[in-house]
Length: 277
Image (cartoon, rainbow, N blue to C red; front, side, top):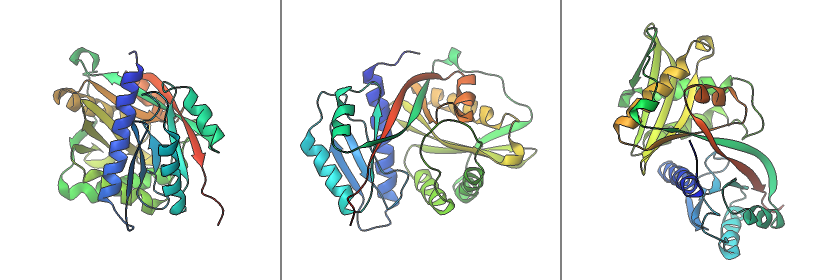
């Protein structure tokens, strides 16, 4: 699968909308923040929110330093760091501009995609593992599983974001599940919940979001089953492509590539810290 800058812009801007919508829904402070910057979005929801970011910029020519300055000032006023997530398919000049403004490189993440033509989706199903969409009264168990999975991460990979604490994971998982177009799935083995995953449909994109497997059920194909179920559902919804973001060289990247995802591009993570008080 080949990725153009236009497709990368669609993916990054959908990610920005997802973060902005979840931050607005889960408002825990006086105001959330959603600012347009260079065709992308600067999003702030709460202190230490994993959804705080600057993303989707650099695809439409030079980025206005006035717009950058406004976003930086808004984050600084909240005492929050600003993390820019800049695609390798964006204007290379943007990286230089951000370096000059005091942004520090902190890592990378990979964006992978899967075309959703029917003949590109694996049809074989596991006889041991069942996957079903969650009901509204299963939001709590879904969040509980994600907290437990994140607390005992499957080690591996290079760089990426720091792992958030349990309370933050639960808070933002529940916020995500309440958004329009978001679907959660639970995988069971022998009737026992073993894994969870979610996706959001946006502009003919299927965004595969948080996924996790309880430690005692790992290495049994749970995530493969969850990937196939979401790919089939996204194809049925007439999406064009499914996308997922992973830590480079991680087990998650290995899992999705084994199911037919292709590396589309990387994002460089660049952080500007607030001024010292």
